[in-house]
Image 1 (cartoon, rainbow, N blue to C red):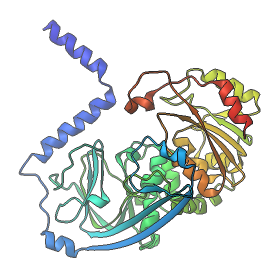
Image 2 (cartoon, rainbow, N blue to C red):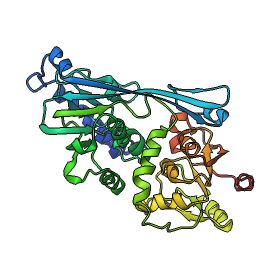
Image 3 (tube, helix red, strand yellow):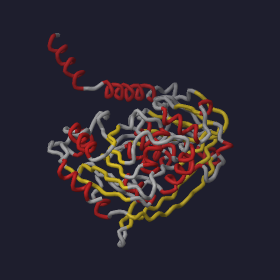
Image 4 (cartoon, helix red, strand yellow):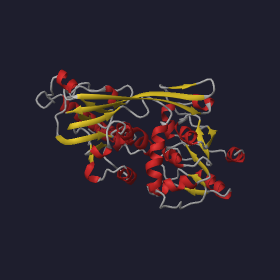
Length: 398
């Protein structure tokens, strides 16, 4: 008995509360979906097809990018192509479906799924983590039926975790796709993951969706809608380019609302990760001291409101910061802004360079490497030491 207790103690020390919660959700999903008496019984597939209206929107973008930097990307890039002139081409054919009696359901771990009224999963409108098994037929009972017209803004599972970048470009940007075919004035509700942060509420309010119109989809909760407007993902299956149309829409909608806010810091800023749970430099204090000596305001973005963040990036002339979601705000910079992105060679994502290049500002990557012997999937947890002498050379080159 003592040995069993010891093993259990060791197990719970190794497994975080977050992982235990995810494991619990997966187990509960299996139990509920295995019950033959509570599963969803939908309409016939033929009737479900008749109740679906499909719209398509094709885009073709050319982005001036550093081709060598783009090719270093760690993520598998599916829909982007480097052309002979060094520009990157990305093409998408977006789909918006008007689903009468459509359903939405997620386990908040491996998938977020949209189903037609027959209970068949629509792959192009859903998302799942790579290598995971996804239910193609709905086996979960409907908890609530929602009247009116609802726009689905629940993007990837990552966007549901409150990540700033995924919220703007994998979740909320879906409204701009839907807007091509449906007036926002005719949308009664928006479907989103459970909202954790003020910037989520503030950005939705900026689009005209107050709290009375927001429906939060909880894990293992299946909702059915009179009419569900659902789009395919804004970045397709795996583009490393932030769509220009979404950048322009955010600048059009959010920049004017930030005009009443002045930047709380100077025009030369260093964005520190001192408040981040991972990827903070082991010599972060020394880096901050050096940047301060060079005339930079050293800041963490977390304490600022959405409007203050926009104002900071709008008014900045020189921005230095490590690859991370906070750099999403680069889309609010002016063409005169210079950006020095601190890039771990095992954590290369051209997303933020694509933001800078779209608005015509200047992007430069300062590469560094970690000494830790971790597999690539653990690169996000890596803590590296930044060589300040090398950093000073990159700053001098701007």
